[in-house]
Length: 112
Length: 114
Image 1: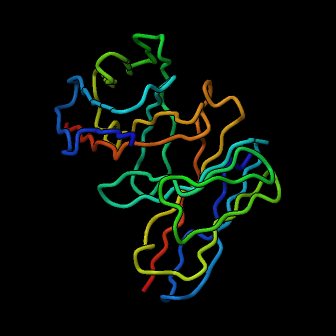
Image 2: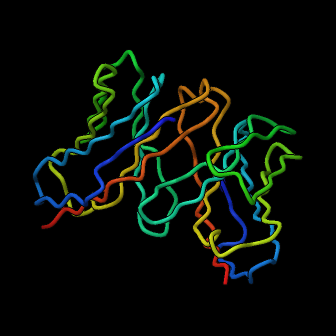
């Protein structure tokens, strides 16, 4: 069956540093991959989408890479701020885009 | 524009009771989803719908039923609640062309079964 793995341990970094989160998947070849942010007590909010034919995507301080050979996506936040502290989820499309399946998420804590 | 609205926000049920969670979206989206979120397990897909009148099973459908009688509403039913169904439930919706758009989520329903 398909499996999506994200760093199970929380990532603690200092303000101003770059945070890098990992999403690995097995037994599937998604057409695209999405990243979401979730704050406590709230629903996930979309951040970025990257397609299988795209190596890298950027949006302000965010950067996503997608390596279909390694079956891995990396999510980077540069110049991190305490306000970036949240849980970050990756999601893959399945069944030709009909299903959106999520990883368990990685907690990011940015300390000032 | 309200987006995706879930009702209720909180609920406590006794084992064996039934209830229905309502999800309403005002964005004219074709696709709608129900997820449950438990600590350490992320979002798990319960059921989903690709259009009015259609439903399909996700990863963890047992113990739940759904209906999509109107395009804007997606109902999740628990016929006989069990403590294992204690969770936070999220509804989401997307436009038909999922490959190019994001999912919009509701604020969640926190359900406790005692």
